[in-house]
Structures are given as structure tokens and as C-alpha cells.
Length: 474
Ligand code: PLP
Image (cartoon, rainbow, N blue to C red; front, side, top):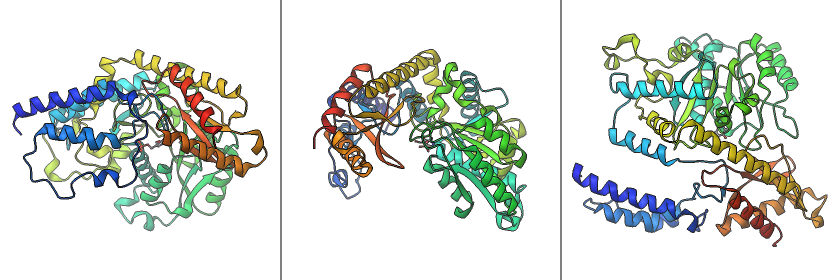
């Protein structure tokens, strides 16, 4: 493809993308496809080349796009807001178009230094103190893995340089809760902690926040048995019910043991942009690492996950291999982000934040988040005042967890659970809205995660009607 061919094809692609976005409400949220449908509609043999870019747009239109769950749709209330602000998409285009290679400072000085500047802007905007240094990871899962590796090496005094974890000879313990995201357990296992050494600390039955007395008992028992507390992962806004583990008490308890504290604020971290919500993150300054995803509620397109570290030098010691072919004339003065995470080659992700912050601006982003929070409070009030509906977890931010309890099923937890799973599935299959069913100890409920950029009050009014309709149909 020549640069001039690219110019024409890129304009046409952007026109098509804009038309799709403008007409998003005309499409179902969940596509009416079954597993295998998309593959069947595509040729099984590899192409031979020579296709006109317009033919690709035609296939995007006819086959690929109709198989997308429309998470930018205003009636999408599933999982979490996965916003993709158009300003950040421009940054993503710029990143692809510049096509730079992030393997060292020298391979793209701007890639490194814009990332330093942008993570510093976000630090200021979120009220974190200057002790924090930021890096952009692909996801919070990777951020947690990186933290788990740093924790392992701190607990073993850098055993990797020597006999490794096995040679260290003591059990290394990780503490988190059943409410923590599945990526936490995955990170711990991948970082070499034994499944038997990962403690699932008890939670409060209603808020699902970590119970610090149980954390204390678990740590004391492990230490008495000769183990080493290596890592505590505190959920600051869990995916399920927005639980906030009590970080100030966790810090006070854990500090004497020297365990690494990772604050997982992947979903809720956007609320740090709102000074009036920072009380939820009390204690965060005493963590060792914080990760949160602008690629969720804040709306920077995937993959833009921030990891802040109090002591990046420790991480660099864990991650650095410094092969000769990467040594550069810049020497030690330049940041080498390859030593702040796992991949060598990195994309110019910082441009996505750079574009969004410069075009939309922090104030407009904050106002949108406040709109969503007001919408969530309004929605919870509507549910509380509706016969047969219940809000089943505290509404800390923008997620409202609900259950429908028809009088005919009252007292029968199993039947109520099955009923709730059934109406959510019916609603999702209708394509008119999308919610995530989720399980608590006493059965299924529905999570209404509010915060898609285009969701306004009228969409929530419509959702209430749809919920009544599908919950009362059988
Ligand atoms: N932690 C929490 C609290 C989350 O809500 C999520 C995603 O839903 C993750 C971690 C994982 O995020 P990512 O998809 O960026 O790995």
C-alpha cells in the first residue's frame, strides 16, 4: 500500500467508523450471533492479497461489526464501562501512524518522555503525592503481575539472582479476598506463589470489604508457621459490588511484616479524579503500587492501564536484564520503560491519554463521572421504591446491584436466584439492553454498571421499564 492509497483508505475508514458511532442506538447491544457464526461467514483459506480497502469495509460492515457487543451503546450496563472517547481514539490513530518502536529511550525518545509527562499529569489530577512514578501497562492484570513479581523479590531479598524462590526455603504468602478480581489470583500463581499459600481473607457479608481481623489471624498463623507475608492485594472498588478494602487498617497491620501492598483500583480509580470521592481511597499513599484503568470509566481507549510505584528502582532491579544491544548513548539518565514491566517492545500508548486530556480536558471528564454517579444514586432510589425490587449491596460509586423478588418466590433463595439469572438472560438476548448477572453467596443478582459515555437519564428510565417487563414475564 502506498502512502497515497493509505490516505484515501484511511479517510474512508474514518467516515465509516463515524457513521457507525452516530447510529449506535439503532443496533442491538448484544449481537444476535451464536459461537462459530462469525468464523463461518469468513473464508477459511488465507487471502492472496490485492483486495480493495473498500471490500474490507464492506466485510467489516456485513460480517465483523455485526458480531460486536456494543459496549459504547448507551443501553450497555454490563461488566464495567469500557469507554472509548473519540479524542483518545485519535491518539490511538496517531500512535499507530507514528509507528514508533518502544524498546529503549533511544528507539523513541518521545514515546518515553510523553509517557513520563502524561503519567505525571494524571498523578496530579488524581491527587497522588509526588512520591509516585507512573508507567502505562496494557492491563491491570499485567500491573498486578508486575506487582506480584516485585513483591516476591522484595520478600526474598532478590532471590531470583541466586537460588530463586525454591532456594529461599520459606513459604511466601499472598492475601486477598474472594471479592478480588480473578486477575489477582492469576497474577499470584504466575509469579510463582503456591496456590496453597494464597489466603482468601474473610469479607464483610454485606459490603464485601476485607475483614482486617481475619487478615490479622491469617498473617499471624502464617508467620508462626515460619512463612513470610509477601503480598497483600487490596481491592479499591471491586468489580462485583464495588467493595473497598479498608486500606488504612491494612497498612497499619501489614507494615511491620514488610509485605508489599498492591492497591487494585482498576475500575474505580477514575473516581480519584473527583476530590469529593478520594475519601474512599484513604491509605493509598501507603501502598507500594497502585493500578487503575483509564480504559474503563474514564474512557481512554484500551489498552491504557496505569501502574504507579513508590520505589521504581526496586522494580527496575527485578525487571532489568540490560543486554548489550539495548545499551545506548543515553546511559543512566533516561528512563527505560522496558524495565518497568514485562514486554520489551512497547506501543506509544501515552498518546491516547495525551489526546483525551488535551481535547476533552479533565474538567469535562470529571463532570461526566459526576453525572454517572448522580444517575446511579437516582437509579438505586428508583429500585428501592419499586415493589418486588431490592438493592443488594451498598452503592459506593456507579454500580447498582439489584434483585427482583416476586412475592410468589419470597423466602426461597434458590428459586429467587434462578429467577434473577433467567430474567437477565432474557433481557440480554432481547438486544435492548445488557446487564451482567453476578453471584453472591445467596445466589444470582444483576449488576447495573452505569457509566457509558452516551448513557443519559432517559436510558435508565427505559432500562427500568425493560427490567420490569422481563422480570415479570415467564
Ligand atoms: N481489577 C478489577 C477490580 C477489575 O474490575 C478488572 C476488570 O474488570 C481488572 C482488575 C482486570 O482489568 P484488565 O482487564 O485491565 O486486566
